[in-house]
Length: 346
Image (cartoon, rainbow, N blue to C red; front, top):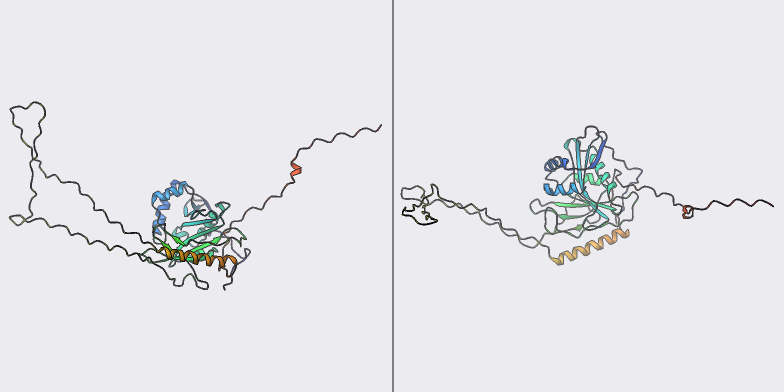
């Protein structure tokens, strides 16, 4: 069994940006050019958001921007939601980007802390997916996130995605951990089975990935362009011109109607060939049921304390709730009549 390696809140470091004071606020439509250009710089490490999707996130207030408090120059942003996979207690971080000149200066940690502070009261966990071959995994580890599970990535990149999760309440040690047994949305839009990381195995170790048994359709061969037909003199044959029939309106006259031939042949508009859609790769339902049972058995032991997850957080980004105010005596809120004057002695 694994023992938890957790640091007390007193030994954690509060993230203070090393670029001077910064201001974190909700993004506006004026920030769209910055958001779009920054995510294009990190397109190999992010699930890319189309512009329409990014606009919707900005309008809903799901994107925070960190900027220099003096010059108002944007330094990074974070796209997140405090509700993931229809679970009120679980939030998710979709994108976290910092400008190249502002990396390793605790700007990203400040954004994550602001995300936790703005989350709903019922949200107690936050998660994120990160490709195994990225150095960003060490960042999530330093913030106290715990690697719980993994899944296979897209077929082209053949990556492994690590599922990180963290309890965001300060001093919370009872909220049960959770992760999905299967994902079928996102940029891949394919079924991916999620498996727990075995106890004692580091997140950087090779992970077994289960793939779908559904064969993918082979790509269709490209059609070669037809060579022009050869004419009598060896050159390309000119297309035949068909005379257009004349049209006459009104009372016919003795003047003959002459058919006018077009100077150039009339060509139909070219239609782009439609690409055949590949059949969606599906996982065997029996395999999904076994993965769900494995997930439930694993989380049952983890949440019961049979073995605990390892935490190597260095920075304090937890959400500190205000202390409850003193409870007033309900009798003190009842208005009372002034006491009657004492009767004079006879």
